[in-house]
Length: 129
Image (tube, rainbow, N blue to C red):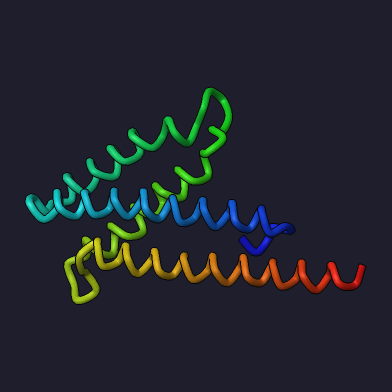
């Protein structure tokens, strides 16, 4: 989001990150529920493969990227990032829903910060002109 030159671009990038976090978090919560029934490495591998099969067509379109491919790509990555530590068999493991909300709050704060910064920058540069 920091590479966006306009306020509208920062808003679109922020919306894409929030949507990908919601989609990936939902996938991780569903995967966590399935893993709580049968916690095996085979089931975890099959869940990641199923996520790739579901989100893959939304990432790619023919030989190129789908127009919303970046959102779905980040959603798949978010699902993996949330589910992998949640599935750990150690003190760091925990429910995927809790980790999903933490990530959502983090990206929400980042979005507010980046849109606010770009708006402040646009406001200051418009006064100079």
